[in-house]
Length: 401
Image (cartoon, rainbow, N blue to C red; front, side, top):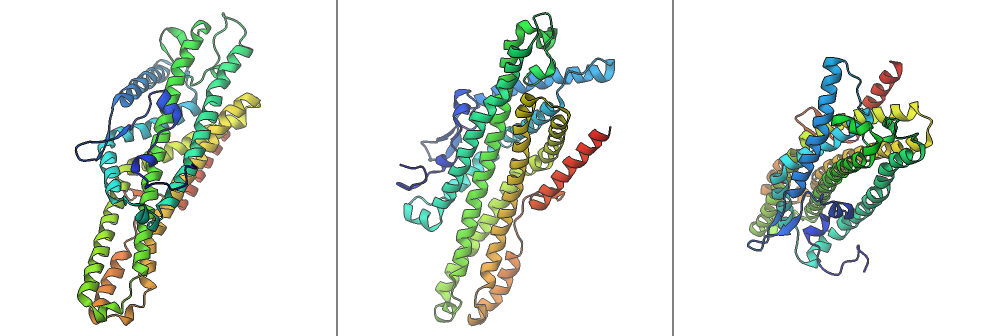
């Protein structure tokens, strides 16, 4: 059976499945299970968050100490700016997942309650198309994480094994996976290289798992909201105002249900934005800085292996930033579709009461749902252009200095 073929109704768990490497590394930050008491969805374990916290304290604690020593005592810095910046980018998203874990579980349950249980209703809501889009992304992320990730991690190891000159020579930064500083000089000691590489590998796995978990939750939630808004817009289009002249009581009873559902979906859109708005504000601009450092690194080296190692994170940053802004535009367009569906009605053929209601309803539909952060940014394609421009300006500043 192909994953996109419908044999039985979809369940919310199918949209929230982790990647294989997350299960192997015990980095599944949301282990979704059904509560046998009320059938709600819960996060079954906090162990991955605890392990991730330990790795982040180790990495940022050591690097923070080294940066303080560089600023206060003038010691040479050991950080790799592109890697450090993207690590901060991933960790901000992981911190958001931890701080908003209760809201995320609550929101997933809200979507689960709105998800139809029978196959006919799911097809009417076009859930098959929503799942098809999810599955295409899931397979792409699987290729990225299981092919690109190992390549990024193995290149420094290969460089060390093939080019390192001897046990008396310190390990160079380009031979390290993450770079930075560790106590007792173990990071530059060739005798401890495999131990340090394994620690870096665990930190990398943690960061990529944060990134993929954030990405999947963000896109699954957005996909379901767009699906529900699209279904509601089709219901708006099917309204026949002339029925208000023949059976006004039943007509307005059905209309009340549609308006209540619209209010519910608008509330879900606001909750969705509240979950991710801090991450939008902080991580997108940190992402611009990371992209700047990667472009600078690529422009300053002629080593094919280093270019191969850093080109993938550069493309991933651009691609995923583009997609987040695209999702914001899609949600905005789906919300605007409600007003468009109303305006296509022959409202003037309805009763006087309906015509009055229609004017108020149209005004309410003009309150388009958008993704943003504290009124400072709106997550759409214009914002993507702004991020790319910021990255380019930072890049030209570094090149000129």
